[in-house]
Image (tube, rainbow, N blue to C red; front, side):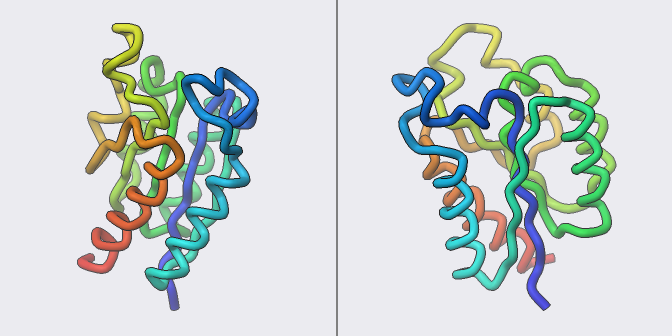
Length: 147
């Protein structure tokens, strides 16, 4: 039986490809789903991608992952810099957590350099556009195969 990886995406990522393409590019969340599914399949994993503009829904999905998923890849978007609640939820998850950002948050506004999620994440990938999800999935494959 293959291991399941959940890929969670926070607010405004439903507008990926339309919103500020000079920062986030023209690829869509559907393109991200294709990449994640393809790489996961290559590694003998299953993946599902979810997106919400609502903090509570993301927290509920993290709670569900505790019993259904071997790992979490999360792009918390703006919640990265504001949500202690997401951090607390991630602390309840025992598997690996990887944080992904499309842009290089360290080259942007100063407030974006602070991540509450990073306090729980086993790794952070930033600035690689949607290819960051492929990198995260590949590393997740290594992490869950050794557990």
